[in-house]
Image (cartoon, rainbow, N blue to C red; front, side):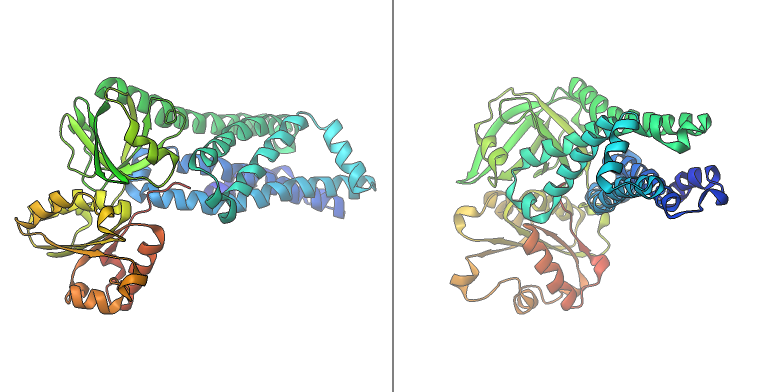
Length: 428
């Protein structure tokens, strides 16, 4: 990433003579050019991070790539806004104009500026809705479609870079290189985000088989298909699911496998937490399904110790149930702590109890903290329930707040960071 940024900035370096920076207007304009080049490069990098490149996802994990994507977002918006302000300031200082006159001159005399204005407006909309306050209040579908406009913003902004960017207008070779960079990123996105999933559907013919009501607010969706073993999906991994029916088609949601994959069957278990997850209970048999994946490192492959503790809360029981079955088959002391507010929230209990007959140690920690008078997963509770926790691999899956609290508690008990395994399934 750093080398790529330096290479992009070198376009300005080699195209700008030291004698050209002889006034504050020239300095501001040059700084604006660097900000624009760097911002545009980081936008392309953001697209690549979530382009589903298989080698990158296997090496890093989709949750970490999504985190890097979010982290770059703030820097991108700052750079793009800085680019606009510095270019306007440079024109104003050079021409001795007011900010408003300089802005008007840029808008009316620079080519393709209307497209650029629309592009930066879309970038700002994405940035604003990515803030914690609005993100928590927007539905996943609204957030998703606002972020899809990023592709439109990138396309619209591209034209003014080629037609108005001094580093490309003056150097045809740099212009060709820049066009090639955009084309390569577009090809990666189209291939791994569109073509590969579409080909996968035709090959695997995945569709809804049946929906099982596990609890009043949790369902398991069984999916049937062919050659599903070729997906190499491991218990604990997740897919991005797109159900081809009203209310589900226009956005993909991440749900984990809740049972080991078979050659003709997959299963997910989902707790109703929003409009999309509520609607899964109404899915009909035969609804086609597009699935991207599998993703994630929340698997038995990261196990290093004979003793394992699995901690589940809420919807986290899906991947934990799948992982418990595989770990039990590998041998060793496997324990599960299942946290729920009430017995009505306990899903897949029958399957966990059957695994308990084969050696799985299961403890149900049911009840609200206000009713229990304590947190069953605090230091005292974990030390009492699993005295040897410090010697185990620990897998934690549940609501974000619970996961963060449990991980902090584990670290306080002396569990090494490399023994704690978590995964974030939300991409926003």
